[in-house]
Image (cartoon, rainbow, N blue to C red; front, side, top):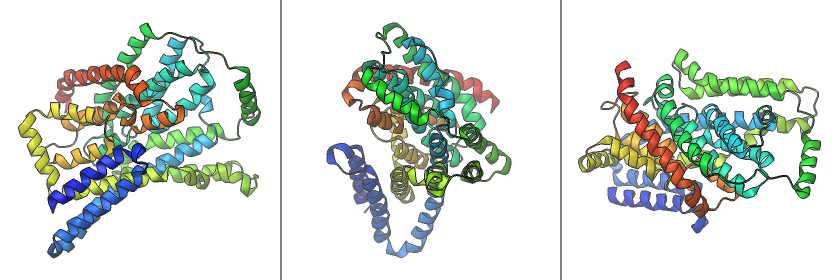
Length: 436
């Protein structure tokens, strides 16, 4: 039965990777895979059904803490966005030199992605470069580098990337330590491609044509007057997100409690900001309205994937696989570097979930090199292909970037950055290890 479940898992995985050619949404594939794996596991050992139920309950409590955390974060960002809170950042960028602008955009992306998360940051930054870079060809380079910078920025922050968040919620890494050990490798991962483009990037930002000018005039009319309370919502929202790791450190409660607290506070603030608006108009500016707009399919996608991985973990398959890899390669650093590159082909969420099941916390305690390096590799390795990260997929959809174009123009740069950052981590690691 174990073999059948593994085959089912692999088939589900392939269906997720090929969602565009087979025209089936990856959420559907993930949910089916997750439920069917547990169903077969339960049917294969009817005598132990009580024990299997307990295992499922344990997995569900872990999974739901990740899901509620994500839903809270998505809602907060969606709410800031509906108040156009991010214009506070975008209105301050004035440069016309493409190379300078690229540094500014990537720098903002890098740090913003550590506070929001790489997916949201990419969406915000793409909407921003549409205003700043009218030239389509030039904008594609910017979009590609936004993916690289957002993934690099997400990797070193406990709330910056879903995979780092999973490791943090699972207790494999601690917030302060992951920031200290990964910020330099992550920066190098972004700076190396930027330095290369500094010498090779040709072209102009372009001017808005008369056609797009009428479009932007319409925009200014619509968004000329800033929405009342946009700064308040921006600072309360960002403050709430940044306070989540602090809340966990002080109370030792799970991170989703801190996220729900931040959401609750922001919810109250958003209700109080515009008391005189009528209900219909107010709806898009409340947390309830933001909740209706968050990406629920991706939340269910995580549920399906994490359930499927949980079934393999409960059967002991992942443990055996880890032992096999250990025998084959012998060095965990090689294995994790490969996992990072693999995460550019398949989604990094299931890869990290599987790795968390493969390596036991008894053997590798919190803040062990394995977990830190995994956070770096899974976070940044996804940039190598545009489908390798949530940020990449979002940018691909928004700017209609061609898979092959990205592979020709950006993949090699991302790969250079990935290996440079990985080398930096492995060189610096002994210095950090002394402080443990």
